[in-house]
Amino acid sequence: QVQLVESGGGLVQAGGSLKLACTSSGRTFSTYAMSWFRQAPGKEREFVAAISWHGRTIYYADSVKGRLIITRGDAKNTVTVYLQMNSLKPADTAVYYCASNRAGVARRPDEYDYWGQGTQVTVSS
Image 1 (spheres, rainbow, N blue to C red):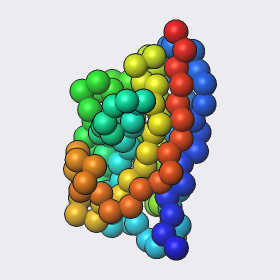
Image 2 (image 1 turned 180 degrees about the horizontal axis):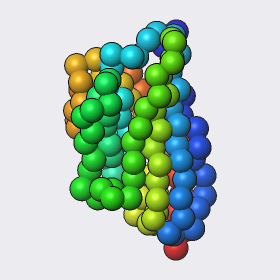
Image 3 (image 1 turned 180 degrees about the vertical axis):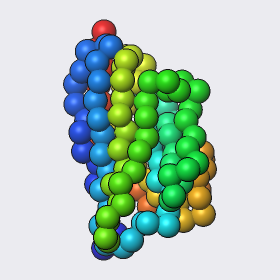
Image 4 (image 1 turned 135 degrees about the vertical axis):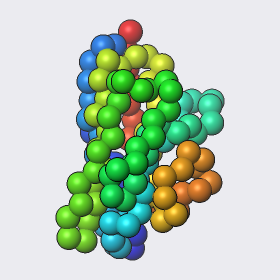
């Protein structure tokens, strides 16, 4: 069974930091691009950041550039993608989802093959 499992969400004050992690299981994602999306209540799911399978291509949404950093670690039979979140704002409050895409880095949710269940990030003012 293919799984992407997110962790690391929580409640933080504005200006604080969190680090999210997404770990894969059930198949190898070493040749897949990995990404983070988020969805706030009443809003559509939006792109946050993406990293290619080799790590040399990285995309960020304009709203998070300079504050969030995506990285990945590849081990035998598993891939973990991280999202270091700094200088958090209340506008960053959302459920954060990890996703994987065999075709490469992309910004549209419908281009992704597998999704995690999400982890809640709440930033208080």
